[in-house]
Amino acid sequence: MIPRAFEYHAPTSVAEAASLLDQHGDSAKLLAGGHSLLPLMKLRLAQPEVVIDLAKISDLSYIRQSNGGLSIGAMTTYADIESSADVQSLAPALAETAGMVADRQVRNMGTIGGSLAHSDPAGDLPAIILALGAQMVTSSSGAHRTIAADDFFVDLFTTALQPNEILNEIQIPALPSGTGTAYAKFGNKASHYAIVGIAAVLTASGGKCQSVRIGITGAGAKATRATSVENALTGASLDGATIKAAAQLASDGIDFNEDVHASAEYRAHLTRLYTERVLLEAASRAG
Image (tube, rainbow, N blue to C red; front, side, top):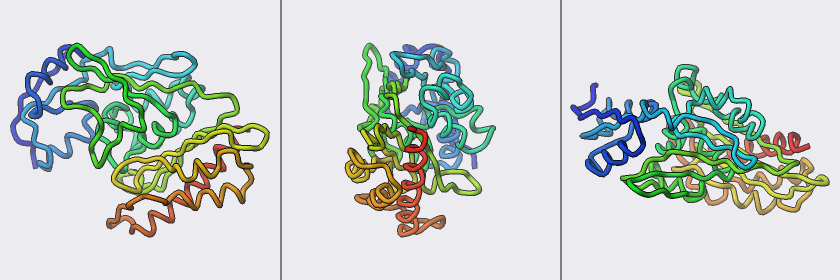
C-alpha cells in the first residue's frame, strides 16, 4: 500500500518546525529517521495530513559531554551513538544498545529522538534511557520543558510529549564511580525488535549494591522500571544467589504482551531470566 496524500514540509530550524506544529496541530506528524512513521503510513494506520521532516535541522544532531554526562541531539543516529567514543566511555550500555537496533541500514538512518518519541513497546532505546535516568528536553513555540525518563513513556505508542512539542535533546547524567551498565535482549530473528529487553545501571561498593536502575522493554505496552528488583537489591550483597532471587521479582506488576512471537507466560520467564543475566553483567562491570 501507499500512504494517503499529505502536505510535506522540511524546516531548517527548531523554531520553524515548532511554528509549523502550531499551525497544523493534530493533523501534523514529525518525521525523524522514518523507520517507525513511514511503515504505519504505508499501512494507513497513521494518516497525517501534514508531515514535518526534521532531517534538515542540523542543530539536532550532536553528542557532547556535559557536567560529566552527555547531551545528545534528538536527530543523532544509532550509528553515531554506537561509534561515539564519548558514549562508549560515559554511558557504555547506551552504545551497546544502539548497536543492537535492527540492522546497519536502520542504524545509519534511525534516530534516538524518533525512537523515544514513538514509544514502541518493543524498541530497544527506552529501556536503557530509563535505566540511565535520562531527561528529555523539548521545544515548542517560545518554551522549553524537561521531562524525566520515568514520566516520559505513558502507554503504547504514547509519550508525555504535547502535540506542539519537539523532542530536541536527551540528557544523560554522569555515572558515579563503581558503576556498571549492561543491556541484553531476546530479539525477534526477523525484525530484531526486543521480545524482551533488559537494561541495568548498577553502582557497587564493597561487594554491595549502592543503587540500581533497571529498564524493561518488549514485555508490556510500554517500557517500564523493575522497581521491585531495585528495592530488593539496594543495600544487598551482589552474590549470585541474591541477584537470582531479586530477579524473580522482575515480572511483578507487568501486564505482559501476548502475540505470535511469545505468550505472556514466556515473556514473564524471559523478563526474569534476562534481568538476572544483565544484573550479573552490570555487577561484574562495576568491579
